[in-house]
Image 1 (cartoon, rainbow, N blue to C red):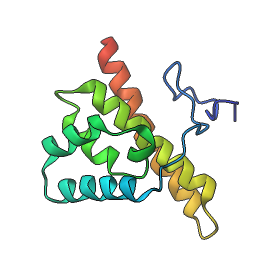
Image 2: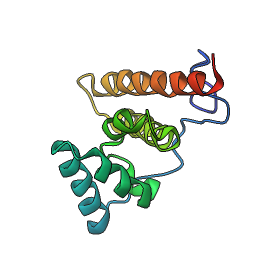
Image 3: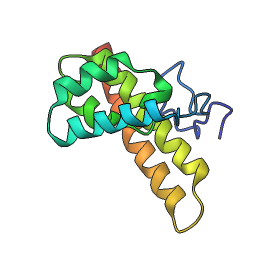
Image 4: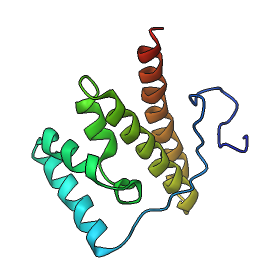
Length: 129
């Protein structure tokens, strides 16, 4: 594994690093915002969830429903989708770092890799490959 957190497979777009520098905000306000996002996603109100996500700091969005929102806004807001996919990958990376036993770390890494594949696909689409 390189210092960026990439395992050498070249899956990360240039300029991306998986070693988390941002940790989630665990304040009551941040938890409430993540709860509001989750409620909007559960109600299939993705436009409202996306609007709220645009206003929140990365530290608040970590451990929120970033991937679900990104999947819904990808077609019309690639920039927001990229940010949210990246935060979803970082969330899974943190889950892997903090995992205890029972395969939780492996599951988090697998989830992270699935999100990174979406991010790489987004970059390829934007570059016209």
